[in-house]
Length: 434
Image (cartoon, rainbow, N blue to C red; front, side, top):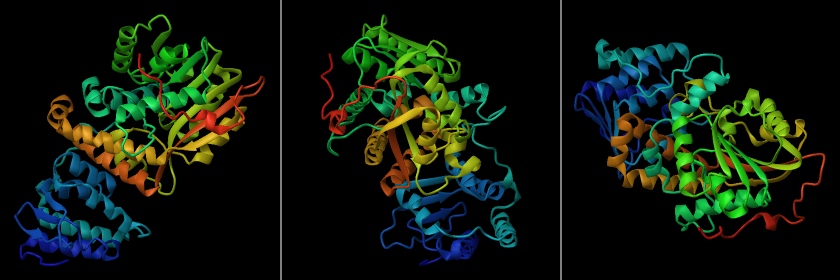
């Protein structure tokens, strides 16, 4: 690992890192500086930065020697990185295929950590931003609590992060150099084209966010639109944006659970970045709800993230506890099958994986540009959460571990009106604002 300082914490840390994961973590890309001033020199010729380890980090890792413990330590500020997070997150590649540490060895390693940090280091509290859900998983009450944990943060913060479009799903790029707003407008138009929206259509947007899709659809395609969200602050801002656009007579936003909608039929349904909150066990009920709400011959579009290879961190994962509580990312096959079972015919599937990586890079740039304002809006803990989440997600999409799919389905019973050729569903440019 290079030079190891002769002070106890660094020596003990070096011994621990050498004994876990087959020694794959014994050479880190950053210099590690501990609370007593001792250091582990980086294994790389040009260190990517400095990882500062405060005493409390040991307590978090003793309590949860896994992804959750590392996440808590970082979010609480007990782990701090001077420099880019990416080299540290790339360490996950070294851990692929590594079996769990045996129980006996784990106890010995934890004892080493306690000896290095002292018993007082164990007095750590979980970060305030961690989700502490109550009630039955994916009940209406718990889903409402989980969604609001993520979205009821600050509308002002989301403006800083997402930009004026306020679209919280991946954009659609013609080239990697497109600006975010152009690419987001193109994505909204892509959805409208895939749904073959026509004047007078009744559109339902499940998980409408701040209303961007229904505003676009009403303005450019003449539809009557209903958007549904579980977040009161989102709904309030969406209604204000609709009013400012002069579309209050054709656009409506409701605060409601998607399972409670009962004013069918709708001609078209969009669900963008919402199914991830539904839960794998609820996908058949989700698909059945879409089928119930959609008229015969109507079209629906499901836009959502799927995990391709890894399994994430589960209930003790960083994303589950701090970003999208109770969220799940089923593989594509597990999304399409329930739609088919509900009588919805899959007509078009498109991967937007590279587009999401580009989008996340734009959001990270926004966060960096507006760092001071973001801190003022959401505080240091949540700012760290978003930095860690978006950096890790960008790498996941770039590596091919994550993808995002748009699936268009048609309900049987009448003609769907889709064109014979797929290019007709792929707009090159969004309509001009106006």
